Length: 24
Image (cartoon, rainbow, N blue to C red):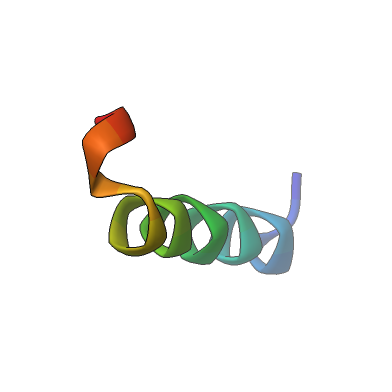
């Protein structure tokens, strides 16, 4: 995995945390 792929995954994870905090 490249740095871009890892960064994209982190951004996606944070986006889900902000959008759906109830899902943990």
